[in-house]
Length: 325
Image (tube, rainbow, N blue to C red):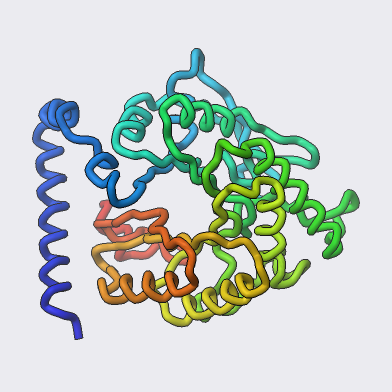
């Protein structure tokens, strides 16, 4: 049964979102003027905790002297397309004003920073680090090992055959230590492994898991720690409010900690919707359970959707698309 407190709070939240949308629609100029007078968000909480945001390429290259063309992977099969980066100086300005932590949205993911064997593209990542140092911002970098946005060649030899366990471990070690080593002392923390568990608490059957086994997670943390012993090292995942998934993650992280693996924090992704919002008690219990590991617990990837999603796992839904017609 839902508590009166949580139900009333949700109603208030909906009202706040409606009010914000109405005000924004009525007077963008008034909001801009108010923004100039508004206290920085991170300064309001600087005695309590750090608060961050993700920067994309348009913001990272906001002050580039000329438009930059970049080739990015269109999908994991290897097709490419070219896109022009339209600088977003307003977005960068907003991010720097209100947040004291910045995270790369995509530019440190494998397919972008290490697109082909022996080839690294550090331009965008270097620029992000330069911005952080110039503006005295903390960097939490994302992400070293993930089942998504990683090219197929990572798991294959020159003939296209699947790598052996040892060969893939060596490739993962080279990738992690090249990147972490390059930014040693400049990056505060790393999302070392991202989304390695299923909803029932079992291991996701990614190619990392299938080829290496469950210890690919431990190995990734060990390699990152070797490259920068002072960096904070995090495991990051979503739906931590789900007790089964959370229990599986906690069980494995506790095993890693007992073995001396240098895990220093857990990131709890918070993708919420007003139509399917977890109970506050569920969020609180998740934080309590994760903190029992004795590591830092962070709210990561926080977003709150007002409209229904137009997509399900099987494609667009009638409910989701009708609202946009």
